[in-house]
Image 1 (cartoon, one colour):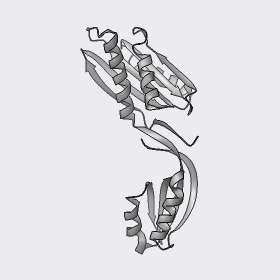
Image 2 (cartoon, rainbow, N blue to C red):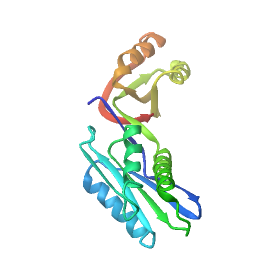
Image 3 (cartoon, rainbow, N blue to C red):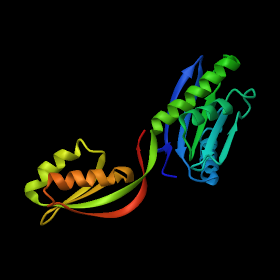
Image 4 (cartoon, one colour):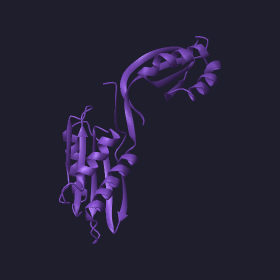
Amino acid sequence: MTSYKTIKQVAQDEFIVNKSRFIGYACPCETEEEALAFLKRIREKHRDATHNCYAYVIGANAGIMRYSDDGEPGGTAGLPMMEVLKNRGVVNCCVVVTRYFGGVLLGAGGLVRAYTHGCAIALDAAQVSVMEKSVRVLFDIPYPLWDKFNYALQSLPVILENTSFQASVDAALLIRERDQEVVCKKLQTLTDGKADYLPEEELFYPWPE
């Protein structure tokens, strides 16, 4: 497995339709226990809500998939939410859509649209990202070359994590594993081989979708 999609952070968003309030929550979860713990927190927070419907997918290969309508008519809440997760290709994620009934019936079609939208805005708020095999590379750059080096980073597929200004400039870069060779060669060429570098750590990192 070289990459998979998940969400970057816990987040929420909400909207109102026909006086019913819908609140969509999304949380990154690597185990089913984490997903159930998140669901429990939302249920406790909104114990006075009419419904707390959910869907979660666990495992980089989507090995565990669960959803619930929580009292809404069958197939109008949990399943539409699961379809959103599947269509976006998101895993290791739990979404809960809380509903406070406003007194106006939405009908089956209206419920499907509302829970689909609640799940989608929760994912957008949580920022869908691609977890890709990445490498943290440490560069040692002579001061006269730093401005040139830093400017070049703006057009390269890298993330500058931090810098330290000592006898020279130490810069930690995050680079996708598939880009590592090309990026390092470009930066070496740019500095006439005067910027030494050392791959420090391999990790999965959430890059923007």
